[in-house]
Image (tube, rainbow, N blue to C red):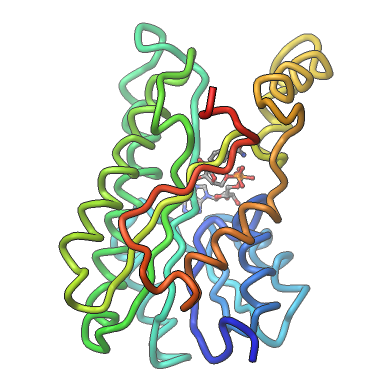
Length: 251
Ligand code: NAI
């Protein structure tokens, strides 16, 4: 029996990169997946694979009514939510002095308020069934200070501690909540990042060299970890931080 047979999952940011890989991996493991993204066309593109199981949905995770509609639509269609993956996220490449307040607020709105709102509105139906798994997408940037990532580091640090708070708050009520902290993952995000500098190839090589394995992490490798944490194989795991970074944090 596939690991997620009969399970209903919401994956945010499922129109690209890591979120798309998670949606595909979960569907491959038997789940029905609501692929939620700000960019509906991108979510629809995700759903061209496993089209029987993946339902695209437009959401802005920073907007409470939009998140409520996502949860409502999922419950109306499937009757339950077993898994919530809070993956939608954005970044900036600035230190604190150069960061505008507006940019700071935007990063926190997507990366922190988005996780709060999705958990707040998905949890009641999970609690009613005393069953639910949340996987939050953190980052190594939530564990250490990285140059030029002021807002991003702070926001992902908040995701890491919110994960632990959710884990302890609801552990007796059948809810598990864990966080994945990837290093640099080969997604459109990284393509955009390296395209900003005069020598994108050199920038990419520098990102690869930062990780002791000498390569970027693959989105599918993060998706495999999300599948594990969402599955019953991880039934004893809550409040954990799983680092997937080619050895970067071990140094
Ligand atoms: P990506 O930029 O390829 O995909 C992010 C997706 O989130 C996009 O489809 C975008 O439309 C969606 N999104 C953005 N704002 C949204 C909103 N307000 N509501 C709903 N959806 C929204 O990014 P990638 O690389 O796949 O990253 C996914 C997650 O993984 C993020 O949380 C990121 O911080 C985290 N991460 C990424 C790493 C990397 O190296 N790519 C490393 C560590 C963490």
